[in-house]
Length: 456
Ligand SMILES: [Zn+2]
Image (cartoon, rainbow, N blue to C red; front, side, top):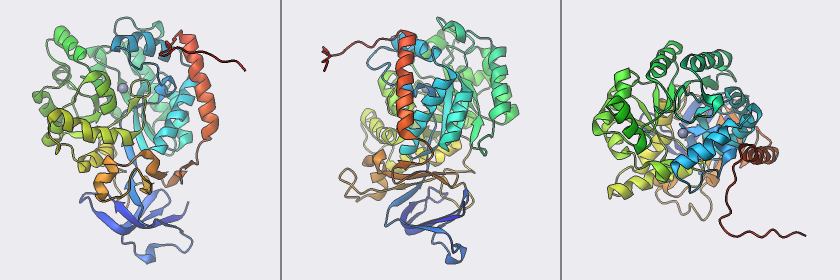
């Protein structure tokens, strides 16, 4: 792969001192970052590719810590319906009618949006076909922590999902043995827990044991809806996080998603056990409520950002979620100083890497780390003039400003063109597959306005 020198840019390193280099460079050697800032010319090989940035930004690739790749082709399935209709009449019929090949195409389609929004690493909480997801991510060139959607109890589940704790653990162990550290180490397998509604204590405890044994993380939706903590209170006599603490699951390798309904005491439990949080503002706004992100940040909890799935929040665009993260907490706290842009950038980069247990490997532009980075071109009416250079990345940037995305030293997108995948072919095939699943699952979205079909 050789060397690439990105020179004369605005380098936002997100390293330990959060150093910014105005007019700086990044030197990439194969899959790693060799130098950042003022690069010693002696380090640059004569045949290095030199890219003149003309002041464009370079940032570490964004980390999306919660994205359902298998839901990408279900986009629109649950717009403007209540939660139970969404889950029982739309999502479960949809997902239970997917095939492995559907999951593969859904993943490819999702990867296109991730690459275009500057994501280089993500965590997927679980579709039914880890094999299909692995294939898609491998071809896309991204990094991912993939998990199966794991359920061993719950009312009204489709028959194919009625499984025991033993079956679920066995399958995950098989997936792990088959796929962990595949695609040059870019693909890793984690354990999944869907929600406390669908997971017994026995499964939760054994999942924690196995995740520790294999040295991987656990990805779980935690305290996401009010109805969930009410259920846990009724069944276990305590709210979700307190219950998980009693089970001994709160730990540094737990990635807790949504975490909207936490008491202040439970936030302290998170900090004490170094539990990682994935904040998904768009889906939270839709059904779940406001997570106490300002308090979590103040208490020192590691908060990262996720987009959730296209069936719940439609946009798998972390740039949109960064913008929402910076806005919504100001609104409900009635305080325009909370969750400033620096915090949001930390959440989308180094905190994301920490949440995925990878902060030694990527998450900042640091010599020795993997070359996972993005080039941002602010040129255009939506981002210019750039007066506050750091805030602009959160308050004004759109994902269309992300010009190029590199993962593991390889360009996945260059000058807005996707290099690893055939974008048009995937859009066509994945859309057709999405429509076919709607048919198979018997999901008919009502017309919102009267429609007249005009024949030629
Ligand atoms: Zn989710």
